[in-house]
Length: 404
Image (cartoon, rainbow, N blue to C red; front, side, top):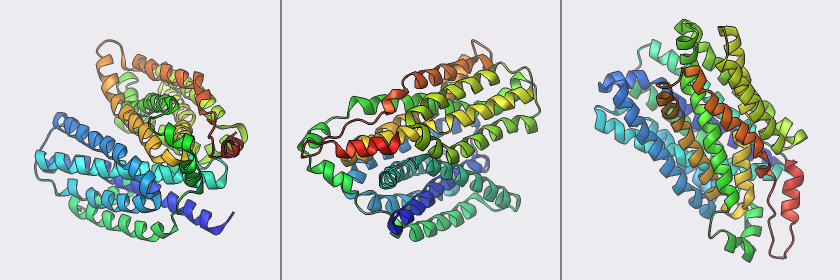
């Protein structure tokens, strides 16, 4: 493996850590910023929709731009914008400035999310084997690092503006160090651009991409349920104290991160279809176990199994979207990640109203159904044929061999 490709992989790790760290720093400071601005939970909930809307808009805009100018150009610009926007919520003084700050931060983080996933696809194509899941693990690790840093600075009385400003400078520094190692234009993209059939096909988004996007919506909705309801499940359903209830999310997040560090090896050995099929089945089993748990230890085991099963699924969807058409990798990834992000936001919104009809633990059978659906439709990950200007499918065959 050449040094350029290895350096590009390390740079991709760094940028995934940056976007996870920046997002984690915002999350850690939500209570302090909420108090500083003087708003309640209800108003904050509406403002968070602006963050989501901004992220979705950024994802849709940056995908085609990444295809046009290349990830090597777009990723560093997006990272600097995301780091700079991180400071804005800490400077907000009222509901209007906080809303604007969250919209800008969401937009820039959405840009970085899609552009770095597109670069990750390019790295994976160079390695000719699955490497996507480990990148997503670094996003989670970046969030863990943010929680530790935030806990340290908050206990010492640092203001959100001071902490977020300092961490923004740190993220910009990492960007400056990692940017030169990003890969140059993908040769597979040039091959696809030269093919008249590929140009014609890119006039509209393939149906396969929309299927992948729909699966991303459902599975990231499941992630959103775990993020927002796992601790409440233990507290409200099993009467666990708050300190114990927090372990539910910790068990899920730890299993998710560990699973993503291992999923690439599983995908290389068994294939990406198997990762989605059996991972979704395992997630469905874990969520069912948590929903029906008679006590806290069984519930924690359920959330752990759920995180482990779900861990490798989303990275496979992103990877498949990027490999479908190298010349439109950014646009395709933006479709899948955009709908996936909307699914994560929809998770809490869907479960909340359902609790008015059935107990909280029984609402978890909705994500169970979504996991089963993903497992049944896992064959969509099988590589699609890519026709070259010479009419061959050599590139598709190489991709299939690398991802089986």
